[in-house]
Length: 450
Image (cartoon, rainbow, N blue to C red; front, side, top):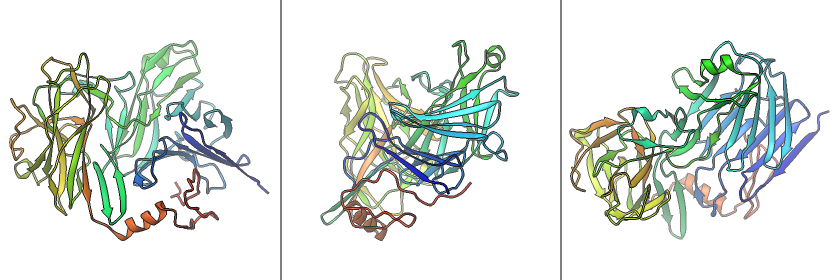
């Protein structure tokens, strides 16, 4: 008879909350909560979670499942190079940051997964000897996510970012963006999608046993459902083995890059997180920006909202924020006062303008999207047209979103409100009943088997 060992670790405030569960040597599961818990339970926020293994399986399932906003969008990565081959061994060890999982697929490669102090997940690949190919290929399943490969050489303006940005992979909710406040009587629920960013897989760094390093890159082929980690051929040929490759799964909420500003350039998020938002009332907008150098009152931003039509000619501007100064010298969300009315059954998109009197002093954060996912036009003032006729293609997906309020309510929202305020609700898969005010760090749920 197997005995069930449940290890529950809650680490606050610097470490992610982590729960691990193992059944002898046959089943291992670790759940890493990569976001800080919400201050209020009546907020639907990203709540990024990484689940390694499957708590419901009698054997170890070699996969990472990344989930955001519940299971609204997910990425499931099979950890095996050969999906038909069994895992030779898997071990779980407790560490100060939570559980660490070590697994070996064969004599050529092993893997280690554990939480970092900043809340990200380290996915370490260890090559015991020179591989036959420069790429490690993993099958994956994608649900309601758009994965954007980051290549700064394709940006229309100068951008800069951390070392891990070039060759990385930014993941965004495919269907949602913006923040919505839902009011019904005395009840208030908040849906926080912001830019729709779910997570960011950093570009991998390869390190050999002598400490020599080289940057690789990570890409996804959505049509074939493949996640590909690539390391330079010359490095693998000259390396002293074993070699570690570490594509960190980061919990960033904003774009990796900060861009220089072309004065009054109007950037429209044409195909990024477009969503039917209405009916409702716009209450504001936010842009992630900073001033590099002494603050200047002439460093300013402005947000616009458009009703998206079938093409650029039929896209209509519905609202614009006030021109808002940017005074902060570190990156943060700048609140732009804004109003306007949203109608039901229509799709709305956001856009942003910025201007600085001192070149390169004002910068706005972004992730790079596919070419044409963003539209732009250069202007000589804050005035923009009521349609986007004549706009050009670009790929700078700015970190900007709109906040709006609606009185719309549905039965599902009422059920969720009952859950938030502490009504007892029995889980379908476990003999556990939530008590009023209780925060459950681990609860088994039904998962689709690979």
